[in-house]
Amino acid sequence: MANDSIRVRYAPSPTGHLHIGNARTALFNYLFARHYKGKFIIRIEDTDTKRNVADGEKSQLDNLRWLGLDWDEGPDKPGEYGPYRQSERFDIYKPYIQQLLDEGKAYKSYRTEEELEADREAQRARHEMPHYEYEYAGMSDDEIKTKMAESEAKGLKPVIRFHVPEHKTYAWDDMVKGKVSFDSDTIGGDFVIVKADGIPTYNFAVVLDDHLMKISHVFRGDDHVANTPKQLMIYEAFGWDAPKFGHMSLIISKDTGKKLSKRDETVLQFIEQYRKLGYLPDALLNFIILLGWSPVGEDEIYSLKEFVKMYDEKRLSKSPATFDKKKLEWINNQYVKSSDEDVVVDLALQQLIEAGNVPENPDAKTLEWARQLINLYKQQMSYMAQINDMASVFFEEPEEVSGDALEEISNDTAPVVLKEFSERIKKLPIFDKVQILATIKAIQKDTGIKGRKLWMPIRIAVTHEMHGPELPESIELVGRDKTLEHVAQTLAQLNEN
Image (cartoon, rainbow, N blue to C red; front, side):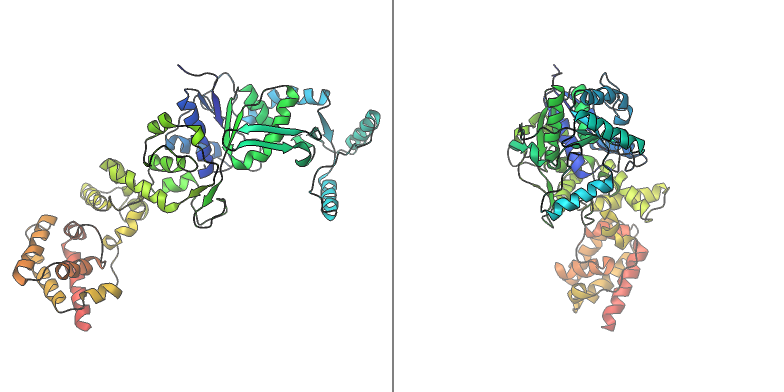
């Protein structure tokens, strides 16, 4: 039976693509809702019109679906608590704004940005933390009205500020961090709840939305901790109970040890980027869930259904979560290895086509060749885009053999092996892995050359690499003509040396 009292939400801003950190927030809310058979809601916080981007909402929802998430209510699934876009809820906010003004818990503020900046400069000069100073200090009600009327006459557009109670502690029992408290005198003074253009600010609108949508629990990033006391003040002003809060740990880069920043271009941070590289959604979801949450035991590979069943919010970590690119690649490789062949081939083929290594509409022969090629590298690939580099020998003419590879074949037996191999494969009736393997074994039997001295010259000559997938399969895919050409080039290079 569904637990209707548990309602959680993911509330993104349509200001860009889905970020790893936001995806984690969505996932932990989703797991909590599904584990306890509650409701998972999507709400779009689109009031920052200057930063909103075209298709930002669509991108968020598409990428959540790609990760495997579904939701009970949202802009595309209207429910009884809608609308689910803040920009469509302005009429809902208006009476609550007026209520605070009527009760003296909020007021119109006419300080210009220049005046506010001058205040901050003076405060910094006095070695004070910058804060808003009450502009009507010491004035009577009549004087305040006169001051406001003068400001209106000048054509100034007011913001609406919330009266912050003085000398009061706001505390909550955080589901992740434990006991947290703030002194009201430390939050920077009366804060804006409605901007001059009439649009409510985040800290005000989020409270009304969460209350009116009956949100019971709020899981969000640690960067929201400082917002929580302001929101608790709003709840208190209306006499409402606040939801339970859980602030998840920061995500830090393993390479830098610093907080994952959207400006750090050394780490891919958007789900869209991983999709384009050919990561599998189940693998990326698995990796993200393990950023700040740990299951019981040593296993790390689970399905979403298994995560839902085992989820326990008490196992959310207080310590920063480390974003490890190598671990993500390892997890994705586990999924690639165990995935259905058609899924892997389809995703890797897209990468080959985008790189221009396979034509856009390949014929049946090319498709079969590409399928064999992809399967050759399936066990090695951490993500599908790697196929283009891993299999470059099949698309690009290799440079001369050099370095360790050249040293490996600079001996008396390498030319013998390569000449025998070249002569014998010319005569093969069928150029496939079975006949190629039989040819190499025949060379071993007839020349007595075996092991590394047999296999490495052939691999290096044909692929110009010392390591790679199964050699007979690789040679078949290179093709007879190119194989003969590469062997001839290598023999010529050895003779010159």
